[in-house]
Image 1 (cartoon, rainbow, N blue to C red):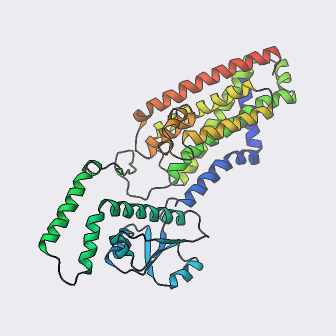
Image 2 (image 1 turned 45 degrees about the horizontal axis):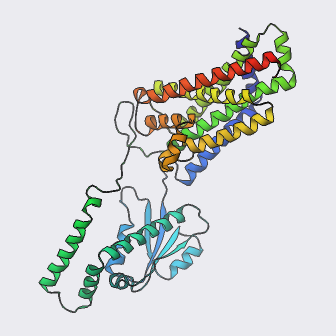
Image 3 (image 1 turned 60 degrees about the horizontal axis):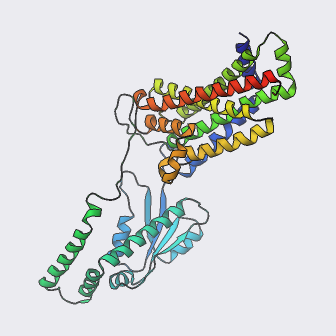
Length: 415
């Protein structure tokens, strides 16, 4: 019963200090909100990039590039606006994310193998979208450069055809077709199957039916930042253990009918309860923002397992330090590094391969991967069994080791 009294006292401490509690939730929510705003959060308003195309060449190739920049009428994310010299004035007024300039003679230079340039003017008032246009232009330039290198002879022949005033001879066209065909055969091992493939995923409801609504970018970022948030909650809860010692409260409790086992057990239960309730609040906020977390039993199980892992990790770390300042420094470093490596800031699949084993050693990885299976891939409880097992077993083991160390230090008077 004494352990439950300690749990009730700690929960009342958070309830009576709402400002402190709100600040613990602020950082992950703010970061998630910034990501959502930067990359087009869910709902009806989706990210749209406006590009001004100043095409001085006005040739078949430049018109083809202009058409390639468009998107479907159903879901237009890229708006390409043909302009003239006035495009530079429009850029000065900030009316587009970027301006692409195709110089006069662009197609002729490309066919002849003469160096040419695709100009890109970026809007300095925007941070992310102009970079997307710039990288897209670079990728397009690399593609054209490689095509010019591989099909150099054929492109030069096409250039000769365009300068003739009559139709080319049938034999010349046949020779051109044969040359292109032979080059394509040489690329067959890269194209069939392609080296790079794209996989599209869709959200599915609990019944397995595909959802038609727009996908919420918060569904990608909020789970990872929620795990980081409960790690900071666990840091705050475990910090109270050291604070109890420094304030003399621990000594007073132990002189009352409270044993060391009661105190340590109550504190472990308190840290777990705080992190679990905090994660539940993050889930509720996500639901209000339109996130479909997945089947309720799977979400609750993964939420509790993640809270256990976070609580166990922080209790172990706090049991090893000698002061509150040391604990704050060490736990903050561990939380930030494990969040970055575990996939809270970017998917682990986008990291170098040598970091994958390190990422898998963090509870953030197993939690975010589990929520990705539920939210992104429409999985259920059976799909996250491994994630639940790793988080629960590791969390319980870390908490047990940390509790034993705390008990021993309290009995020796070192805490």
